[in-house]
Image (cartoon, rainbow, N blue to C red; front, side):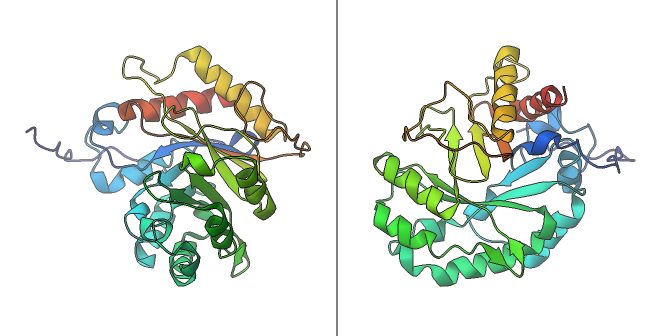
Length: 286
């Protein structure tokens, strides 16, 4: 087994400047920041592991934290992540699976409050909270509706954004879309064939996961595909909806003046995801 690359005598500096410009309210990132192959194609040689978040947050505009799915962290850990990242950077955060996989979902109010009470330590770096419901669990729409009532829209004067990441195919339909719209919660659009794929806009922001990166392509997606995603992201940001994406509710949505957009490259050929995110960010600058 190859040894972990050791740091150089003088580790390469991490830029002190802010990260990339957030063009039109469109944020682009990856899932997590600790992944061994990225030490060969994203992080500079000699960069010590404890500075990887510092580096990643200055080359991307958002990161989706997956580790919290397995268990919430201490507020001191959130504070450390907050302070290592530049102004304007945000984290999307997956809620712990002990909440979303609970048998009695509407009875998880105390756990919801405890999780949110800790995660707000991220302060201005806190982006959407992602509530993931995996396909192996039984999920009824009425239970989901009662759960949505538990999710606060504000804590200590700070507005919270919620994402309902429902991967249970039997729940996805017009009634689910209506529920999300009622509460102003986003759903997840993904280009994956494994999970439900629908682009119905349900909130004042859009949340997309692009999961089709390929190892054979240095930027994960072909250039023409990235250009198409840049165009779609700009359309979402303008308050409109892009053509050609699947929907479950044919009801037209009134255009907005603006929507924030979060696009994450996750799964697929994971080693290519940082390059894909950086390529999309570059396209969005023009």
